[in-house]
Length: 237
Image (cartoon, rainbow, N blue to C red; front, side, top):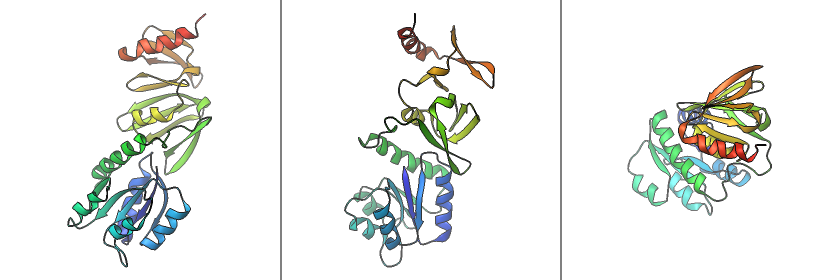
């Protein structure tokens, strides 16, 4: 999701920007300190989500949102609880009270993500794309699908094992699975997604791939085995 941050407090801008950089699904398009700057960003960029402060000079966040013909999703940020009802009447995704904790911030982002993924136009994988960008080390890293061997889930992170090594990103397996091209990648375990082209053999409840020149065995979950074998049998001699 492309996001912008609108807040007249430099510290608040910095805190929210730090949080955004830690979440793989968020791409920061820009940040600004008033509604005029925000309006310019919205006119010149595709924005999916706006973190919007309510108490700002010249025009409040609520009045600014009312002025937009086609606003993006909005998460209000404020130090005052008085505007909560009006904020939700404007179909805000969430309403965050300052100071904002990372845990509370992530809950709000998860709500926005669910809305984004439900939208018909928000297709996760562009048809014909040969690569994906993932956020790691405060930058977007381009990975070609053909180079990804398998993906391992570890709590709120995923480890993408590829020909050049590994890339760790803050993301859930469920959300990443939706972004990968169907047919190329297969979920074979609650903690593993594998590139079907990288499977060398199926050994009981394991699949074998090659990582760093050596055989690597990945477990196949009981609930995923039948679906995996169905796909494999379709390509069996």
